Image 1 (tube, one colour):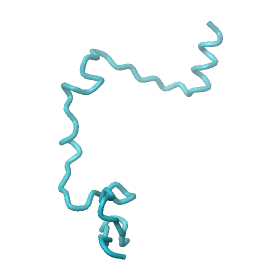
Image 2 (image 1 turned 135 degrees about the vertical axis):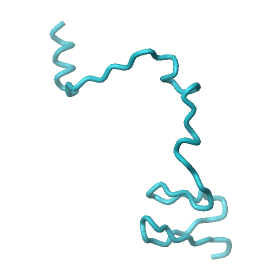
Image 3 (image 1 turned 90 degrees about the horizontal axis):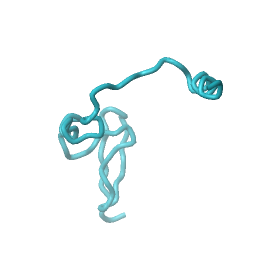
Length: 72
């Protein structure tokens, strides 16, 4: 077919075909044609956690949490 490009993903070790208007992203997450760092897209001043002063994490499971809430 005309216009289809084939790229080889080194992490998957597979050849992937893309149509001209498709995003050139492999199923494993590799982006062809760009050098992308994960930190380039993260700005801690603008994300939803930036206004938080404290974040709490809990070790209970969903079932335990629901049971505790129903007891109240």
